[in-house]
Length: 629
Image 1 (tube, rainbow, N blue to C red):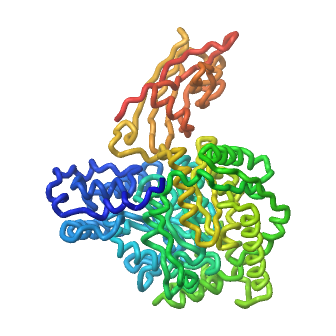
Image 2: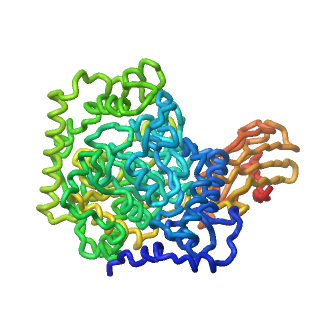
Image 3: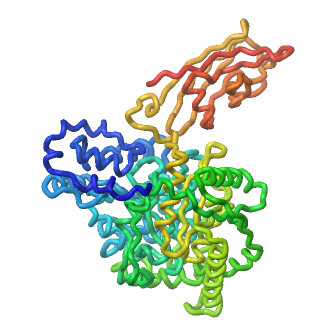
């Protein structure tokens, strides 16, 4: 049965009487926003349990705790100094007129390449740090008209030119599921912020994977819409042919609400002319939990990859596809032997970026620079992208023969894909969003399959597929032109049938003291003669355990090691972390904990163990029992 927008109309039909008769509101510190949906927040405001001002304060508290402090995710680049005042004004408007839309009073964040008249727009680059646009980007304006609170701007891969989110202005954003890894990009700041519940929902842009890869790495959903469905006016360009903008969310329902309020025609973006005479999709109306029953899913083999490093993610995605089959879908294997040849030469970023940026900067009053070449000359670009920027600054003309060939290749690729889908009566093609989990900070990120959607203009939805190595894995669904709502329909049915969303351990609820504050422990274990003492400080948000250990009653030559040990569910013991080695009587340091080891530590199932000379090794063991401080 299709779930239509009847459940959303309740969000809009809020009477003044309901607000006035509500019970007293809790203090701002008591407002729970972690993992809260747009519907949750609207219902809480409608019943008088809370206000937009209190919700805004609660998100700001989480940013202070986990972005500025704690694991220091570095997802937020700037905060809107007027956010609280704007929320208060929207509360007054709700009380007198009712809500404007399902986003009324809802705090959101936008990527730093979206123009905002009241905050700088720097695209993550030191060279553009002082740039302030004359007005809002089209989608930002739509958000303000809907009554959303623009909480701030998120960090991004500088100039949207990569997929690990590092730049000269914002530095490196961390992945909230494992702060030693990247959050995807270039909208990685938005991805990390929404995963960590720094806002209800956030906006990114996608030129080749920049919405979808952060969705995959942060256990989120994100749509790269059909080119022309949403306006890119006011988004710092990378490639006007490939650029799109849109939201990342923790649920398909939140994504649908946001899309309905930010799509549409815009005279400032010629690509939206494709909507003329076309009825806009109704995303909220596409929340059909039975949509997989009878759906035909093309398993697109060329994007699963053959390298050993691709195997783990591929296995998870194939498992998700089997779950789709169990929910009523038919799986159809799609092989396309000439896929790589079709893809070759179909990117236009290197042909368009230099010129698109010149045009954008020329339209901004008092822009700090006028071109990419000037930015390079000033040296205000991060090392990580400088080589790419120099290469992209090379074209001597806008309309080259190579550029025209790339446009032709794109058209051929699109025609071939649609012909394949038509021949097999497929609703979507499915494949890994990115074939490898998030790489460690500083390492290259491989495995991207972003080009298929970006180079054809076809819509693609990234959804959670499962987990491997405690990291999220994403699956992508590619659809037909302007059948974006059909993707949402299938994504929603899969989401309802699986429940793969997990909150990141680095940003727990601020209402859970044992999870939100640091803890300590002092543990002693003795063999009868030798004794080890361990003093520990645990940072829950960073998943790090600092330690000071000392061994007494034994000669250094008799000490083999001090370790942390734990057992699996079947009682089999193993070493979880090494603290000091042979011949060492005292040591200090810090260890990063995996999710399994962290869970054992919190449950007092992690043991300090001393190993000394013996046959076998003589050991002393005692549990590490945390005490909140």
